[in-house]
Image 1 (tube, rainbow, N blue to C red):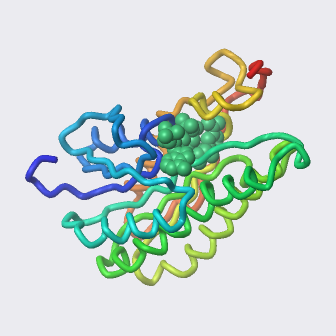
Image 2: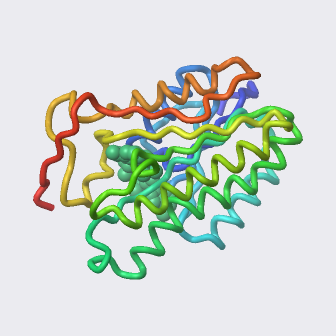
Amino acid sequence: MSNERKPLIVISGSSSGIGLAMTREMLGRGYAVLGLVRNASIDVVQHPDYRQQQVDMADSNELQSVIAEILKTLADPVRALVNNAGIGRMGYLEQLSVSDLRLVMDTNFLSHAIVTRAFLPLLKRQGYGDIVFIGSEAALSGSRQGSIYCASKFAIRGFAQALREECGKSNVRISLINPGAVRTPFFHDLHFEPGEGEDNAIAPEDVANALAMVLEARPGTVLDEINLSPLNQVWVKSGR
Ligand SMILES: NC(=O)c1ccc[n+]([C@@H]2O[C@H](COP(=O)([O-])OP(=O)(O)OC[C@H]3O[C@@H](n4cnc5c(N)ncnc54)[C@H](OP(=O)(O)O)[C@@H]3O)[C@@H](O)[C@H]2O)c1
């Protein structure tokens, strides 16, 4: 980190895909970024204004103590918290184990509730800040083989809408970004992926641009929810 205190953006899942693109975009726009990553021995960003903290987002006890430590030592003003880390476990419900169900809810929903709960008092004290959730088109309608993933994203959407009502008076803005298919390593563990061609998937940088729009909106205006999707919706089996 350089000595100058730049406004800080905290981004979970900054090691890959959408989180990585948002991290690069925000560093390019002059923010400092603190990434919450599963494995801090790998640093794909390497920028003087980037630092990362290792934490397993699915382990609620570890997550609470790591975030409490971060908050104790944080010197920079926090401009935004971006709740992004997530996983997919797709299949007919009876094909998923109970640990799959728990892992998806813990990673995609509970972790973000825990981190947000911990940062909110600080943002309210500051009297400004954005909390941004990366939802999904799966937050808007349920679809076959997506039961627990959709449930986790519906949960995020309800959570964000409720917080939106709770936080306005404190000048803390809450936004939800719902991408359709984005070409990222998210699909590496799944049996399907977006079809080839740039019309069949959003680029992670498109989501990073949506984040920039959210942050740069006039302070009295909130971009409550942004939906973005590829021009076409072609899925292919990936043979994994
Ligand atoms: N790709 C899509 O089509 C799409 C569409 C809509 C919404 N989304 C959402 O966008 C978000 C980012 O996904 P992505 O597409 O960028 O996928 P990705 O490339 O697989 O990135 C997911 C990120 O979450 C991190 N993560 C997952 N589990 C974690 C854990 N237990 N502890 C710490 N970090 C953890 C990953 O860390 P590692 O690098 O260590 O695995 C990675 O940094 C997710 O919430 C996803 O649901 C994705």
